[in-house]
Length: 119
Image (tube, rainbow, N blue to C red):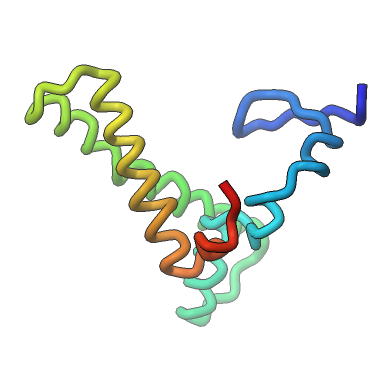
């Protein structure tokens, strides 16, 4: 084994630390979790001083709140267009990826600009 293994809760998988260390790209350009950066920036704009726990909770509200806002798109696609489950799911997921991850997050400064990340 090439290094200690860590459980990645978000991906539900186990990865070795040596693999993460030697994989340059997006993580090197990422200033932090976009939802955390959004929480920090917005609390600063409104002049709020939150504890670490409150900031963590607010960042999770932003993270899950964004996902919940996209939820109505799937049934809308299913009912209005006649798309099947897989096609509607892929369409909704691709739309969220392009709009939220590709446009909104870098556009509002919640992540590194798209030009600094490698695909």
